[in-house]
Structure formats: C-alpha cells, structure tokens
Length: 356
Image (cartoon, rainbow, N blue to C red; front, side, top):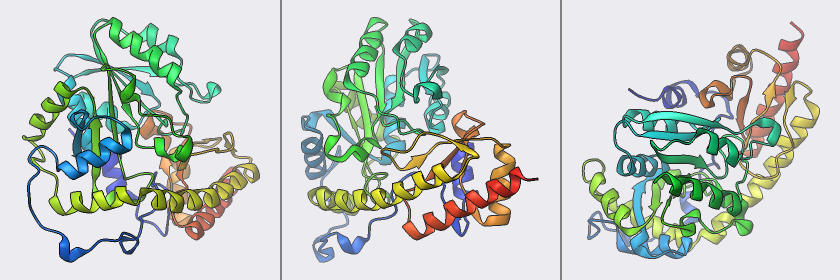
C-alpha cells in the first residue's frame, strides 16, 4: 500500500520547469531572525512543545488543549483519521480530491465513498450531494478548504450545514485548511470553532513557503487531541525540537512572511490569468486566489503531460491523480521567471499537439 501520487511527485517531477508544486516556493532561511546559538537539540515537549502549541492556539483563536502538533498536514490528516476511524467505517470524501485523503482512509481500513464537487458549479460543495451520499455507517466527512485542486472556497454557512448532517449520523467533519490562509486578511476563522464535530488540519507549508519546518497541527475537542497524541506515540513520537523552536519564530513573523507570499502570488496570478486568456486549448475561470490552476484541456491529458515533459522540459500534474482525467493542475507559486517560461512552454506544447 502506498501513494501513486507521492511516488510520482518524488520520482517524476524533476524538470527544468517544474509547475507541479502546489505551494509557495521556499521562504529563505535568512529571512527568519533565528539565533542558531540559542537553539537546543532537545528539551521538554513530550505531548507538544508548549511554546509552539500556544503560538498555534493564539493564531487559530482556540485553547491550547484543542491543539495537537504534527509533522506537516499529511501527518496531521493521518493522525486525525487514525484516531477518528475504525476498520470498516465509511468515509465520505469530496471528488475531485487530493489523493492522499482517500489513500490514507483506505490504508486505515475504511470504506471510501465520494460526493461530487461539479466543475459547472465552480467546484462548490453541494450539501444535498452529501445528504444523498451519507449513511449511518459514515464516521467521517472529509473536505479541503480551499479546495485542492481547484482552490474553491467553502463558506461558514455551508460548513455548518455539513456539520449538522454529520451530527445526525454520529460522524465528524475533517476539514483540511492548509490553503485557507491564501485568503490572507479575508480568511475566516477556522472551522474548528464551529463545534466539536469539526476536526481541522493545517500547517505552515503551502501558503508560507515553510515546508521544511514540517510544522503541522490538528484542532479538535480535547479528548480527541489527547488520543491523537497517543496515536503519535506509535509513529513520530515527538517532533524535531530544533524545527519546533524555529516554527515559533516563524509564527512570530508570520505577517511579514504572508506579505512576501501575497506579493509573489499577485504577480504570478496575473501571469496565470494571461495564459488562460491567451490559450484556447484550456478551459477554466480566471484565478482569483490560490496557488494552482485546474483547467480542462481538450487533448488526451496523460499523453500531453508526457509530451510536455519530453519535448518542453516542463512538468505539470495530470488530473487523474485527483479523479479528473480531463484536467491538469498547474502550480503558480514558484519563481516568477520559471513560471513565465513554463506557461509559455505549456501554451506552445498545446498548440503544437493540437495541430498534429
């Protein structure tokens, strides 16, 4: 058991123009005011390094007892699912979806069902679709906000309706909010504040370019958080102490890092929207927020992605990984010059292949 998507990411995305990444490029370590002489390799923090737990709680406006730390959002999702699920439980997951969500649920022995987020609705969640798909065996409803791979936003009213459906069958709602801060000052409060049926995962990875810190977390009611820490005793045990300390420094400076990210994405989003307008072979609405474009293309997608890689040294993500074979995901959070050159190559490759 493993992830075909992660294997592809780790082995098949090395190219001169890699537009397969879904996050913001790495923030420079020199931009963090770290006194490396003051760091220590180990220290107290058996069930969460207290300064980091408190900093996350303050950022999310929850109590520290509602926070469990984890190594990135993927481990946070694993820990949340492993704690909330038993083998044989039903899980209801959005579709298209980030593949690790259903792959993790299947690994834990759950039976995965899907509800559709339709492109004609802008990939917005249709609560009635969840209502039609839910059963009394469902123990977890899983969604991303912003949606991965489309960057569609789900508002509080919709989330509350989903929470009511979950409560009616004794289920929880797991909301992966790793892209939520791409709304910057317009980002709403975390869904974890909507009620005990909500479990939220997040990290500093995608929005802030701090993936190397692996600073992730889970928000939930205190009993669930205690059980999450105990499950982690079998896995990561404790997070690396050095990166926990640096993560505290990053959280202290998050406003400045967010401004850096916002300025980068504003430039890059303009390039992406110009590409969409100038490229008749792609179908999608202009991007208003987010780090990816998720267009439909009027060619055989897998063949095109191979052609793009071999002839144009450019990599994008085939949509079949998300359950959308007619689409591709193009990351726009990287270096601006690389993005501009990569988009030009995608445009030229689409034109060349469509003429064949």
